[in-house]
Picture 1: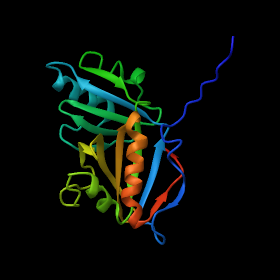
Picture 2 (picture 1 turned 120 degrees about the vertical axis):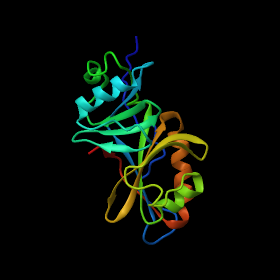
Picture 3 (picture 1 turned 60 degrees about the vertical axis):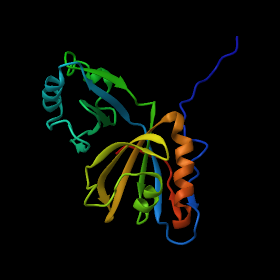
Picture 4 (picture 1 turned 90 degrees about the horizontal axis):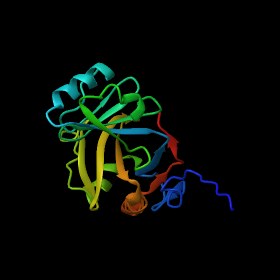
Length: 206
């Protein structure tokens, strides 16, 4: 009987080619895939939203977001994903197994670690590029650091949030279902081509 070796591969393995793309000169948009993370969706059970919030506060030391925003903790990011639900994004700290006891009576957990792709977008033209593909108002006054949205980019469902600025420039993160990741990557890359794109090697979650 033939033996098979299964290698874990990113859905962007074929699409992501590090280097410059599009217009020459200083890149206006930077695209980077973030790999090796744990992503758990926490969803309150019927009538248990308050209990879930209490359990989250005890576990993470901060209140879980109840409105569209992302909240940083010492070892995770809590991202609103809909009414009475949120994502826990971390690096090996908060798996479904690790969180099971915390939410045993108040919430259901769904491991999304291999079901989603995480893309980081930055650069002086990041907002302009995203404005081509999304109806979300990303002006700093409307979408400040920590803001989040369950929305669509080019008709693809995503979770979008803004993290701390880097080198004085806004940084946006996008979680997209793995099956749509390659298509969305190409769409964003082509939409940013006129500004010049710096495509980074995949990075691990800090």
